Image (tube, rainbow, N blue to C red; front, side, top):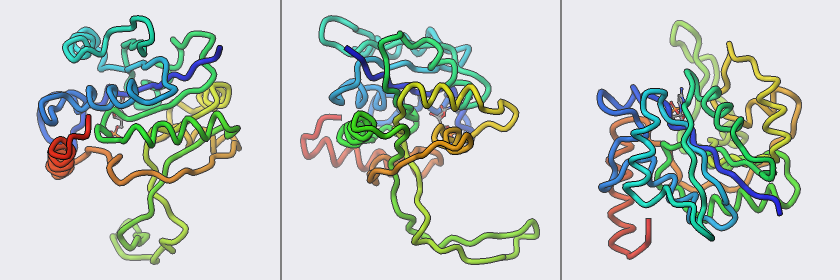
Length: 241
Ligand code: C5P
């Protein structure tokens, strides 16, 4: 039996969100962003293990938060949850989580703690694409805005053809061997903003699946307002979060 693990880099400070707790521990609808993200992974079919990379000084705190929300239990039939210390960059946090995976894990997802409202259906779509033979999979959405390239003097250089651009979300999914090789080849001095980027950098193929607009990343204060609204709408409709 082989298994699927989900790695959750959650060690960022979240400075763009303003002062306060590390981003993953900011509260949305009564629970930290991280709890929403982990809960989704635990509830998704086909995810057997979740590894969270916590801020170095917050490992015990993150363990306590997960326990408080019933996400520390690895009893029979339950998805196990581990917490490791994250690194200085997202890439390092992912590498640390990757390094503790048991041998029987052959598919790995990487999912930002900062995407609390990602539907389980999206997680399952990514797992299915990897289990169907893809080495690396990213969920994508079209861009709403027109995109322009600017120079250092803030002058517009060109308008980019939006029809060939996609915004990339998480979870991203990988055959374990593909992700490990990409991390082994990565340059720590020039960290990538996503894991698929590391696969691309070493010549690997990355395929796309449809993303979901509710899988948006909470980055700025307005994103938290939007997330609260989406969550309230889900709760009013009786959708479990
Ligand atoms: O900063 P950004 O929003 O791109 O971070 C994406 C994810 O990477 C977040 O979940 C954040 O907690 C995580 N991260 C990390 N370790 C870092 C920096 C970011 O785990 N050193």
